[in-house]
Length: 195
Length: 140
Image (cartoon, rainbow over all chains, first blue to last red; front, side, top):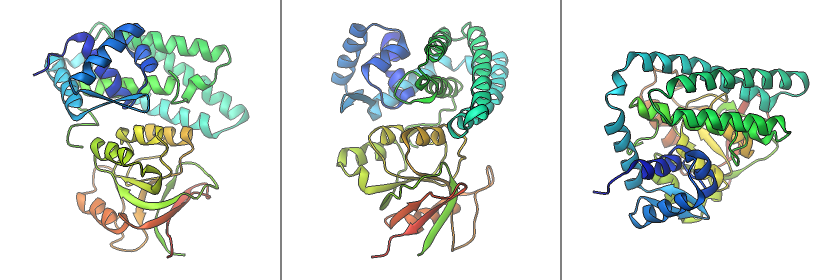
C-alpha cells in the first residue's frame, strides 16, 4: 500500500480535478514549486499512480483509487457537518447561475455579452467570499480564492482567455475543479472507480 | 437522409464530423481510446452531461460528442464550445420506444436503448441548427 502524504495528495488531486494536466497547471492548482511538483510527479509515475501522455499527466486506476480513499479517510467526519452541507447547498445555487452566465458569455455578443461578464464577476466575487469562509473547514479552499483573484486581475489586464479557456487557469477551470473537489469532500464524486 | 437521433445542439456550427459511434462508459475507456490512436475516427457517446472524464478526450482532439442527458449550460457544454467540438446533448432516438430523458425519472432501459441503436454506427453530426443537433446515419 502506497502512503499518500498530504503533498502527494495535493499533486494527485490536482491531476484528478483537472482530469488531464500539464506540470504548469499542477503548479497553479497546488501552489507548489516546479521542482516540488516535478519530483512528486516522477515519484507517482514510479509508483504507478500517474502516467504521462503527450506532455500531460493523468491518473491511473490506482491513482484514482488513492485520491478517492484519501477523501474518504480525511473528510468522512466533515460529511456530517451541517454548516458545511448548508454552505454547499448555497454553492449549488450559485453554480447554476455561474454556468448559465458563462454559457451566455460564450454565445452572446455586444452588450448582452458584457452583462453576462459582469454577472460572472459578481458570482465569482461572492464565491471568493464563500471560499474564504469555507477555508476554516478545508484549508486549501483559500488557494482557490487566490487563483480566482489572480485570474480576474489577468482578465482586467486584457487576457480574456482567463474567463473560460480550458488551456489556462481560467475562471471556469478553477470553478470546475472546485466543484469536483467539494463533491468528493462530501462523498458524492461524479467520477468513481466504476463510472 | 436517415436521422437516428436528435438532441439539444450546444453550439451552431458548419462542422460535420463523421465517424463510428463509440460508447464510453468510464475514464478507463476514454484513456484506452486515446491510447489506440483512433480517437478522431469516432463520435463519442456518453451517458451524462456531467461526464467530466471526457476532458482528456477533448484535450486530445475529439471530433464530436453525443450525450444522453445534461444541458448545454453545463461544464461539458462549456468545454465543447471552447474546444469547438460539435456536441448533441440529451439525445433521443427518432424511432423506437419514444423514450425521453427526464431528470430523476429515467431508468437504465432508456440509455441502453440508445447505446444499442447508436454504438458502432457510422454517423455524421449535423449541428447547423441553432437549437437541434442531429445524429445522421452515414449511408454506405
